[in-house]
Amino acid sequence: MLVGLGMLECEGGDLYGNTPETEAFLVEGRETYVGGLLDLMGGQMWQCWSGFTDMLRTGRPQYAPTGTDEGTVFDVHYADPDTLTTFLTAMSGISAGPARALAEAFPWDRHRSVVDIGTAQGRLPVELARTHAHLAVGGFDLPTVGPAFQSYVAESGLSERITFCPGDFSTDELPTADVLVMGHSPRTARPSTTAA
Image 1 (tube, rainbow, N blue to C red):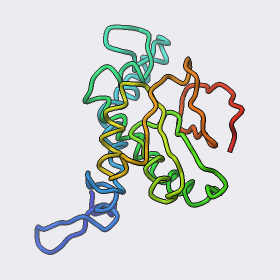
Image 2: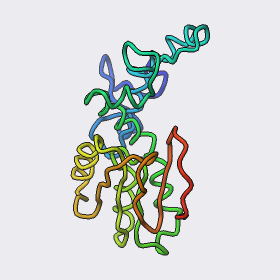
Image 3: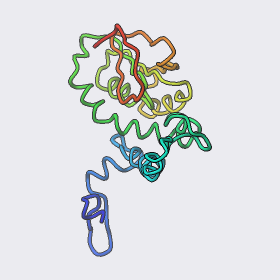
């Protein structure tokens, strides 16, 4: 099946190997890895779909913390370190393409600082710091995310260039920067006077 999907190629006999695309995007540890999203969907998010009929009948969320009828996806993800890691890796996977496009397409030469709101591991800050040496770059997210952010940034060799700003964008003041970026957020953001 994976051969038919173009994810593996036959190397002769019973030997199979990754295609160039699979090697680039689905091998953990690669800079271009996006497989965290598949881990999230196949593992943690599957219960949403497996309980879809029950949700339609009862109106109860299917992704609430265990033993409750209330809560958010974030309550589930942030309650357990392993679950949080999978979630943050998935967010990096989702952000990979847009981060590269934003780094290339936006006129960053007109700005000196940027903060990514809801940064997760910091995929966008890393991409911006790599591409634009003049930018002061930061990531803003819940304090629980800090260690994962700092680890990801350190693995990229950019700890000296990128800072983590702990906070909750639904209740705390946002950091100040020339540009504030927010993407992939299910919550409604407060209006900001800072615009790109």
